[in-house]
Image (cartoon, rainbow, N blue to C red; front, side, top):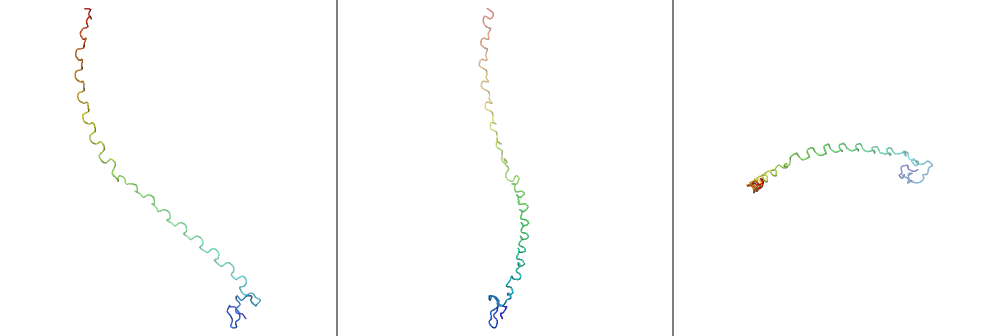
Length: 130
């Protein structure tokens, strides 16, 4: 008799597994479609094959509150020297503040030429027919 375990028997006979066509009309167990030939449990999409929970953007992935320009980031008012804080231009004596040119006696202010008796101021001759 052949051993069903695949090991040689004590008498040296070949085992029934893998020995070629078996002597014996009944098919060896398992020679037909294997029991359990239906898809193995879990052979379909594995449980958990869907995106893992939390695969969506993590909370807080948006810019942190206040990530825009910080309050007070603009230059502080009046932080630098104010323009014009030094002496103003022209604060000294104005040009021309002294006596104006020509402020003295005007030329020709004396007696006008010809200010004496005008010529011909005497009675014209023959005005009376004398």
